[in-house]
Amino acid sequence: MEYAMTAPATTDTYAPTERTVPTRSRERASYDKALVHSILDEAYVCHLGFVRDGAPVVLPTLYGRVGERLYVHGSTGSRPLRATGDGVKAPGLPVCLTVTHVDGLVLARSAFHHSLNYRSVVVHGTAHQVTDPEELRTALDALVDHVVPGRSTDSRPANAKELAATAVIRIDLDEVSAKVRTGGPNDDAEDLGLPYWSGVVPVRTVNGTPVPADGLDPAVTLPDYLSAL
Image (cartoon, rainbow, N blue to C red; front, top):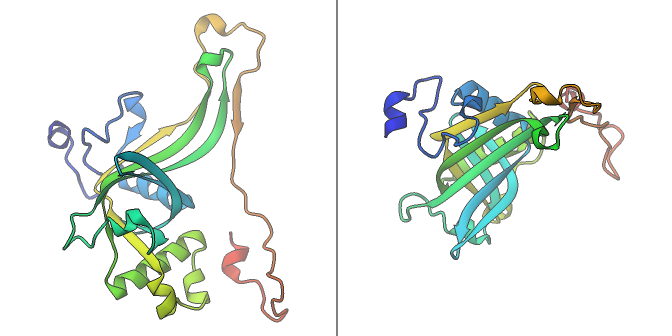
């Protein structure tokens, strides 16, 4: 309660909590919604952590954001998804979801001060399975459009059989924080004269040239939204 009372949530920020205030490098933490959204929207894969049979499990999976809610893709046969419940008959599954971008390799003169420039988001919350048919379709569209914006309207929607085989869980963005490191290495003053290269190697994710599927009708041209990636 101490964190929420000293820094309450606003329309532009999330309220810090004991779980979202880092123990190290607190100056790198941010609760700005725009920053959190930008980090989430730029990544393709999240890591979903939960406890199963008394042991921690972390799964990489696809996700999509709609406003202040994340939708996470899964299979109806997945045990963690079956444990989430719909929020009415079951309390849901406590989870921790993370997303990270690596923006640079930070090389210092000393091994101790080597680091990474990064942007990350950590979400704590309770996951519930999406059971409402309309919300499920919205969630599936969001998952597709998260990877390639505009793709959901340029592909065949899931049919009844496919919907029955697909599970989606939702997590509200409530207890959330971002953490960002930028800049160069933090070399110690006594190391500045050492004869070792020091600086930052930028890291970028670059999309390649789209490769058409085997058997694609030559009359089907590359969509504009792919050309813009």
